[in-house]
Figure 1 (cartoon, rainbow over the protein chains, first blue to last red):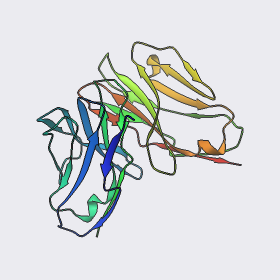
Figure 2 (figure 1 turned 120 degrees about the horizontal axis):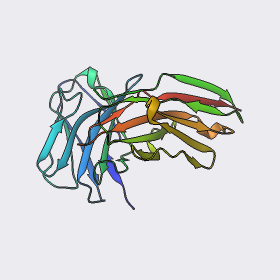
Figure 3 (figure 1 turned 90 degrees about the vertical axis):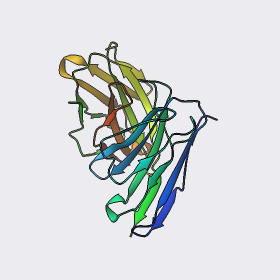
Figure 4 (figure 1 turned 180 degrees about the horizontal axis):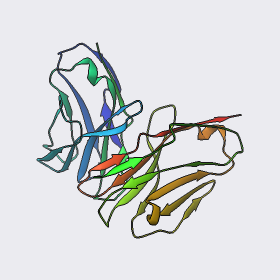
Length: 112
Length: 113
């Protein structure tokens, strides 16, 4: 089954404790991306990757890092999480520009 | 600048009413794609439709229909005979290439029985 899998789905963590949200897709997609969703703001792009070792900043990259060492994986790293990073995070992938974007189920992250 | 505006923050209707969700976009690109996604209370994002900028044909899928008008930069979504299961947040999105997809703020639809 074609899918985007992200983990963990739910996490409560403390300020400053590094965490990684993993994302994996099994569709051999070139493009992968991370979004955060906040009330009234829709989905905002954090980082995206057009291929292995090619990443670029989206609209809200501050406080986040990503890497794309393999085509299928695109982890999101919060080196020193802060409460303003409490949000719902989505990983997404797409074959090429304009194709359907497939989303993971979302990761609810709370930073206290 | 690329932008997607969903001016309706929340809409409340009674079951069986028709409802239209508005989406207005801004882009200078001539090639682009527009999407609608549904986010039910469970939180996942469900793909509804994709439309490219060269195809202005309206589309109907069951109770769902979409009206794409380049002249007004709009891509509106209509649900006919709404049902309680249609209650969700609906997002319109614009993709102009390079995987820079811009989402609107979303419209929350409440359908009351």
